[in-house]
Amino acid sequence: MASKASASRSPTQRDVIFLKAPGLEASEVLFDSISDVLFCVKDRNRRYVAANEAFIRRAGLQNRNELLGRTAREVFPTILAAGYEQQDEEVFTKGVTVRDRLEMITQGGGSVGWFVSQKVAVKSAGGEIIALAGISRDLDTPAKHGRELGVLAEVLDILHRDCAKPLRIEKLAKKSGLSWSQFQRRVRGITGLTPRQLLTKSRIELAAEALRNGSDALSMVAFDCGFYDQAAFSRQFRSATGLTPGEYRRAFKE
Image 1 (cartoon, one colour):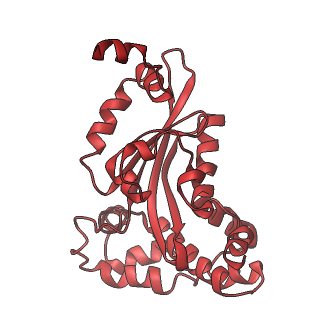
Image 2 (tube, rainbow, N blue to C red):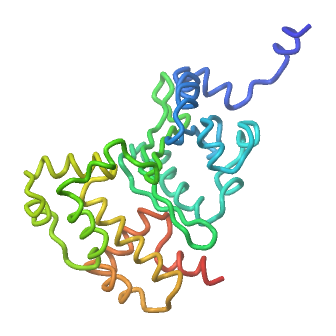
Image 3 (cartoon, helix red, strand yellow):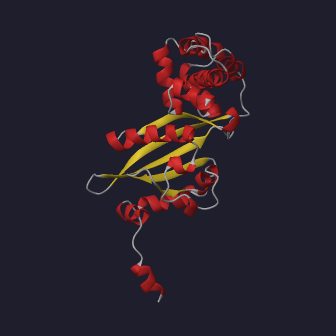
């Protein structure tokens, strides 16, 4: 009887995608064992068809069934979903692979979190894009070498404290006493980010606070937070948050 009931069940979109790309099912099982990486798969309609336990917890849900078949806007606040949707569009319409994309998310009350994301198009045997698979690593989780700051302590402090100044990464590398390649490896090992990403992260975080709590013109916010012009500020801010600076400000003023 059970086999007849199973046979009569209509296949879900999850079933169809897993059939066309069977590696996704194994990936979901493997990522369930990793607590600091979020994994998900979406179909062409931007609905979740797979996710690991860490993603489910991050969404504030109890189990996978509460997530499957829903879109980001049905699960997350609009200000978070906007960033996810922006990246999804690049992958689905252009087949773009998103690598090491720095993402800022803003919680209720203005607290922020940071992720480094990777997204790829999932293709059928015939080359058709049938889904999107993505992982995001939570930067709030300490890196395994985080306690080994050594000579980098002062440089990392400068990147955070003086981010609004016209800092030159090459000079900071020399200040650390390390070669350029050693400097890059050590910073990434400690923070999970390249020195340039770390500087951008600090500037965007500073700008986000100014947009939430102030009313200065966007050009002034850009200048005060270390961006060389408003266009660069808007481009980098939207890349990290999915919203333009103006849209971000309005979301917190409404």
